[in-house]
Picture 1 (cartoon, rainbow, N blue to C red):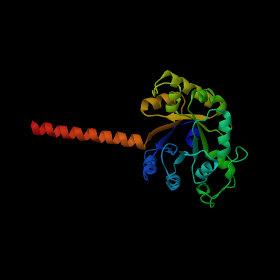
Picture 2: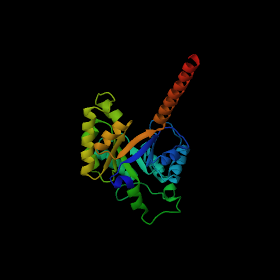
Picture 3: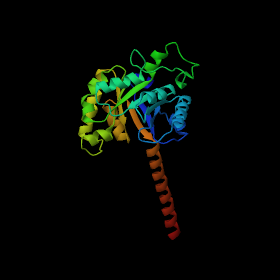
Length: 259
């Protein structure tokens, strides 16, 4: 959050499957945080608890897209060390306010109080301004994934307690009956609308970026929360590169032998 408050782009990796050393590698390579994707992928509670602790020890922010949007699910994630919660499919300011109530303490929201989780080192380091600090440091990201959500971006950004607008291009383009092509004029126009909304209300916005060209275009449009890199793409690209290197070596040897 410090980098975002300074107006600088933050680099975030996505993690869809439990890889114990992933936070260490992310920190080593200069990432600011990791997004745990538990909405579409299977994680058990102990795995999530481990990763939240691991990220804290690595001094990395950890945002979670939860499998459930129930109050108890969100409370447990925050109490156990999540620094951000990402809520999918938010389409109105009323919905945004509902999730502010889950993530933020009174008077900004209505989050239930525990105070003995990892967020306070199990009660050992609970600051005097615990509620104010939590409201400041535990951020709420709402996902805009439909044309209706983009049209409501200004009203959603105006809700106190919403920290980040996050565009979900796959669902957005699908609901616009368009192919998944992040170079389309319609997607750029949606980015401009979200950027205007975020700027008008002192918020930040972001999106996933699969390659440098998409990332450059997004940051040029105002994005400051950039998700680039993750377990699936890294493993897929790494295996592809290794296979290509192997074939180059093999074919070179065969030419030498046959020659």
